[in-house]
Image (cartoon, rainbow, N blue to C red; front, side, top):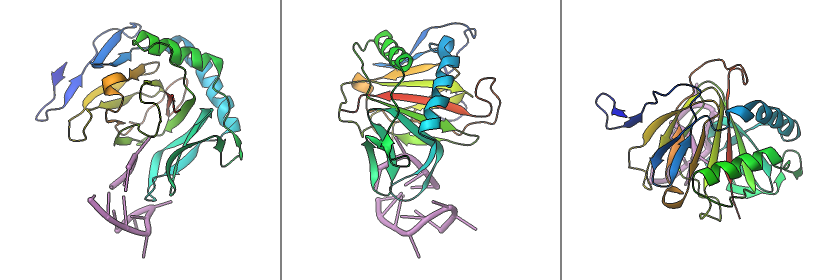
Length: 224
DNA sequence: TAGTGTCA
DNA sequence: TCCT
């Protein structure tokens, strides 16, 4: 870990080899499980494509009408939506007028195991947001607070192109730590950090053997 | 912050 | 108010 140039940004640099699986603490209750999902990545991508056939990726707009750069879909009992009506979870994919696809068993197992590894037992998500990041796509610093249940953690799985993850504090003014998330990395945060501000810096153009020119992210939540 | 927003 |  070291500071970068004239900013006070805390940058975590990882010097371990690519195959190393290990837990890297970001804060109290927040950890990166490095390469945790690597062995399941091909299966996960197959499942993602099956889900997206049923519930296609869609560009979302903030309640103010501005476009988000990521493309989104969901699976599970609840799917996340954003439009002029606001942020919310629904049982149905409005574009398909049918329920969101189920969360595959392998996803449930991965999410539950990762949560347990991070110290959160019995995590049973009821929603999985699927975000697709193309070149330049980003997510500004925000909190996940549309859920009802803040006692359960967030489990985030990175696939394909890497991205700089921003992990801040409970208030927006706290300068976030920056961490480069790579294919197979899983981030878990909860407890005192459940409502931490977080985001993703613009994706740098690249190619990944499994996902091509994009990054996929799965975010598991317990909404209700 | 606060908003005809996708080029404010 | 997960955008600017």
